[in-house]
Amino acid sequence: MTAVHNFIPGDFLIFQLESGFALLRVLAVDENDGQPVWHLAAYKDFFLDPEIADSALENAASLSVEKPHVAPTRRFVFFENVGTGDV
Image (cartoon, rainbow, N blue to C red; front, side, top):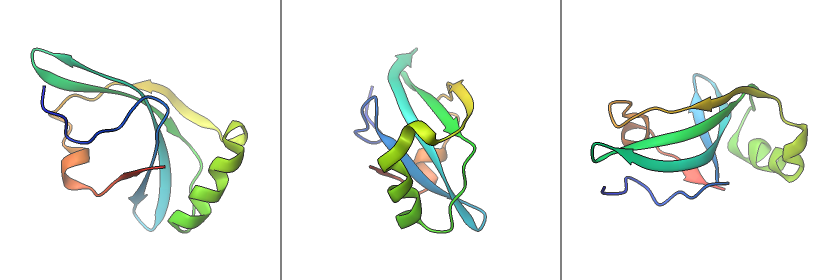
């Protein structure tokens, strides 16, 4: 499996969604038939800019989980088409 990014479990990802920013958390990355499978938690909180999202992570326990587990595969090309960074 060739890594798309070197994210590790526990990393938070801040990404732009429409005019706001949202958070995902990497739970695990494994593979199925040689393709990466990302295990993620999605949060329902939205932020005006990445700096505010980053500040919210100082008290991550107060964030609201919308989807506790999603497992997109490589067919879900999100990480190749959207700039993300681990926090």
